[in-house]
Length: 303
Image (cartoon, rainbow, N blue to C red; front, side, top):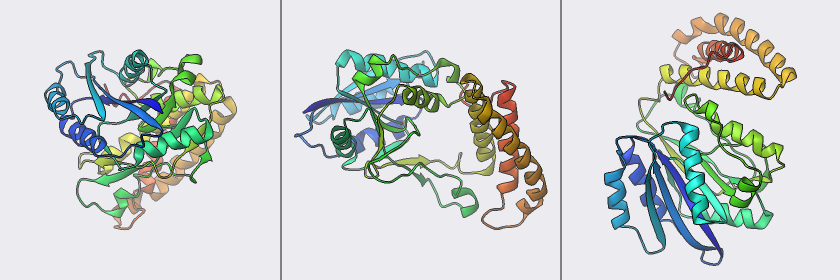
């Protein structure tokens, strides 16, 4: 049986945080493989906006769980995740699980992550993060909210931190952390994954370890998609530069120039109501983002 720490970074989303933690409270756990579960919430807001709901969650915490609230005011995506690692190390778990505060989990989510980790002696296990929209939106928008998906028990190289189990010993032994250069741009999880794979991490996919991500109306629109596409592309080329991966960088630049030209040609189709109407404008955003990343002009989405 193993001790698990579930680490949740949170910032100004107390209602979503409550929904997530309550879904964890209602989940199943197999006492044959899990002996103890600590839910560690790290509030990255200097105003401690999660403190009130955290106190309520502590008071209503089932006996099978231990709820810990920790305030950490040094803002940043990497900073808060590194603080979760630091606080989790003090609890000495076998596994640290990350899940985001805008998600909620399914009944057997944790069992599925842990059982697959045990089966494969894995260093990393990930599962699907399926978007759920706050209200009904058109296919021309919803199709762009895709998510990682692989065969069950498939070994993979991709990495996201929104639904992931990490073997504590592997992270400590390889001195892994989230790079502070991605604090306000995002991409800290992707770069962490790159470093983990360089250390020969055994990284598996659990198709059954499902969480759902709430997509608010403020994100389910073209404006946000343009910004996200630009940011993702600029972060990708920036990471290629950090790795001195010039072959892949040249390939990305060539693709970006092609996207720019074809995106301009396709731009008038934005006015026509069909499923792929926004391909052109998003292709332009991707290309400009990639070229900006080469010049270290990065979009600070989380500043």
